[in-house]
Image (cartoon, rainbow, N blue to C red; front, side):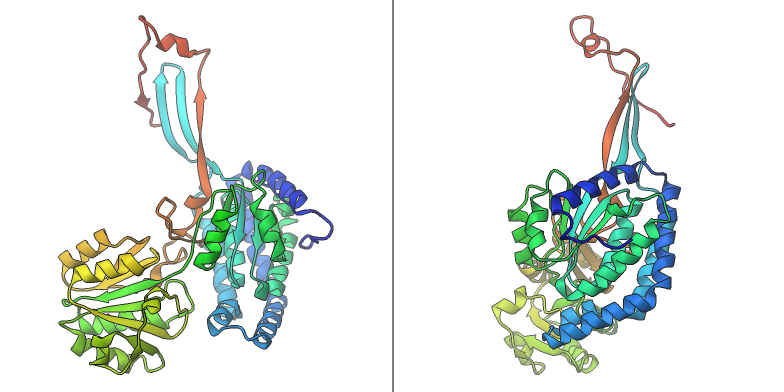
Length: 434
């Protein structure tokens, strides 16, 4: 079975089929869903040459069109990325089942029992950038959590996405999951149509620029879990261990600069700027540094602009600002940050506590790289994205962000009138342990 042909079915019909398949998926056992993940992992492993060939075609086409280095880095799958994504599927299968968990078990009165039970959201609409491995992660998370999924990848990754969904469909045919639970959109025009399908789609997760996320939010009645820019910061405090701070800076900027959890701005306390900045320059010779006037008096940098503080470079570029206090660092981050992930390097426990309490971000780190902001590294198996919104789920969104709950009440002819009036019966409200 192959990915659907958009010319043969309307998007509304595709979404209806996805909803129908999701309904069946939601009531399957955890073993059934884990068996499907195992089948997908095996199929992807066996089809690795086919998948890699499709990705190479995408990369070659993108290079001809002048793709940016940052986007190219995200587009290129590579053997290691594919193996890591497949390992993520296997890890995910080992995690506890997020569906059917009894969150509340309470006796309201004798013979009248309340349960709050976790259940799938229904159908997810995921619009993501040119990262083929994201399709693997998102699909496996959807299946594990009992959800159907409609995927729209970036045009740069069209061949990769088609190859992956083809393999996933072929794997699902051998399981109890209807392949219609996983669908792929292939044109930009379908995005607007997808946003209008509130009858069938329960959650939209856009992964892209701030302007794109805002467009999605402004053009749909479907709830949106927004992940926009990753403008991450590292603040080197006056009480920092300088060697540790340099190591963290290098990793957070250069380990994978195209990632949304790489730092874009470095804040340095004025008391240690002259000691630490030359070390950073020496450790990152390939990084373009842009700095404020105070920074330029210590190391050679290009002049920084106001726009630099608001820019996600996704490249080997770093903006540097010298500050005179912890409060100034926090104020800068809360003003310019995207609420993704921010870190402090310091040996002062009190300063670290203030920073972690006052910085408004989904992830606030102490003495470690921002690159740990990742569902796989958090032990979630994978992630559908990183939410920078204030309401939960926040940060890397794994299984717990893809389920909701329902209240189930069981009685024995109980009626509400019994509990009102002069002779009203009282509720017991006793939590049950089993």
